[in-house]
Image 1 (cartoon, rainbow, N blue to C red):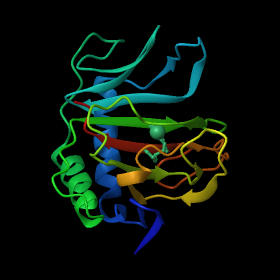
Image 2: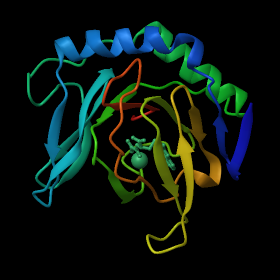
Image 3: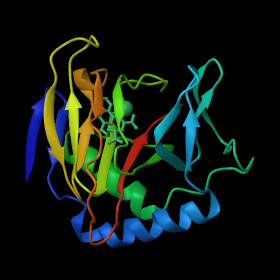
Image 4: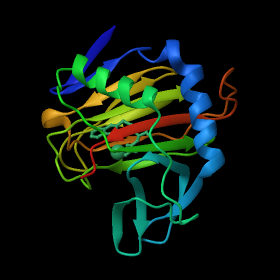
Length: 203
Ligand code: MD3
Ligand code: FE
C-alpha cells in the first residue's frame, strides 16, 4: 500500500519485502568488491553513515564538494554493475509513483550503525532534477525527516522500515531531508544495521 507524503513524494510500504533477501545478498557481493567506508565531508567531518555504490557512477566527496565518479576513491576501481534486480525494482517503483522513463545510472548504498544519522540536506548534485530519487530501506527501522525548501522549515517525521520504498520527485525533489540517529537493535536479516539504497540519474 502507498501513502502520499507531499506532492511528488510517495511511500510504498513493504514494496521490496518479497525480494529483500536477494537485495541483501547483492549488497554483500558489492561490498566484497568495494567495501563500505566512512567519507570525509568537505568540512573535514567523518560521516557516521558508511557508503558504497553500484552502477555507472558513485557518489564521492571531495575537498571542494561532492560529485559522481565512475571510480571508487578507495580502490581506484570502477563501481560494480547495478544488479538487474536493483534496476528493475527502482524503475518499477518510480513508474508506480507516476514517473515514467526513470533510467538510474547511480545507486548509493548507505549503511547505518547505531547512532549513525544524516543531517538535513538537499540532493542536488544530479544533472536532471526532473528525474526522481528512489530509496529502498532494509534492516533496522529509522526515523526519516522531510522538510521544506529551506533548511529551517518545519519537518515531518516518518518511520521507514524493512522493505519500504520511497519515490521522491516533482516538486519534492529539492526538499530538505535527513535521518535521525539510528536506535540500536538487532534485525533478523541485517543484524545491527540499516541499509538504504538510493537510485538516481546522475548525468
Ligand atoms: C527527499 N539518504 O543518500 S533516503 C541520501 O535513508 C539520503 O539513507 C537517506 O538522503 C537514507 O541522500 C534518505 C530518502 C530520500 C532520498 C532522496 C531524496 C529522500 C529524498 C531526495 C529528495 C527529497
Ligand atoms: Fe539525500
